[in-house]
Length: 359
Image (cartoon, rainbow, N blue to C red; front, side, top):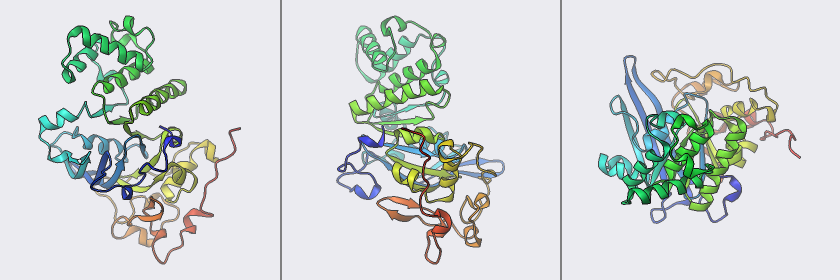
């Protein structure tokens, strides 16, 4: 899951793909809105990105930036109504928005799997963990109960549940938070997915357990070659696992690029503000002053302008600035990278250097 596993031959940007060699997941101009009493709430607004096989792409940003809605829109987990999903969403070239509900169900939970932040809410407290795994297995495979039970124990072993055969008959409340998340990963593996959508799966865990879960995902990815779309607000996790990073704010993409580009050459003021909150970059994790704009009445221009110390009048007019490709898929959506402006106003010397905290 770390960037070190990518090779020069692996596609890393949307431009590297073709119709004959599509990415595992292609999201183009995704817009998801919700009807409310105050008007349409535009949670995701024209978002585009790709995920390749064996690649980990992290969607990052503050709470309310649209990360979770974007992820749940991919497999249409959004209730419609009140939600409306538009855009072009393709999995292995298949148009996900054109699929019937039965067709989508045959992909969701099998070829595309989800894991969520709170595993407790995803498990039924009235049934044993083993029973729930067996039920999921028999949905996807024609196995006897004995065969399904054997497969369930194999999956629990695979994700690091000690004494899996004896834990098989335990109920969810008998597992710790980290063990529950391991069980949910086992559930996700039932259909041998090609793509895993992981929405804040480590947020509620302590640092040690978080690292263990990330290791489990990394091992499984190395073993299966699945792509991972990982939603998080924790930039420390991003640095650990990401190949590419997509920075979202108020439903828009501010910056995208390789993990090296985004962490060592951050170019959008929002990305730099996020990194500046990290202790490793000299910050105190105090957050960015201000709040996100009203999604029912988003401002003109750049969504981040009202919180940006570099904002000029052009930042508050028209649409979000078009993305500028700085180098090899490193893109930024900021007025200061348009013709007639000086990007050094934002970037200073063009880099943020992490303090030497490691040996």
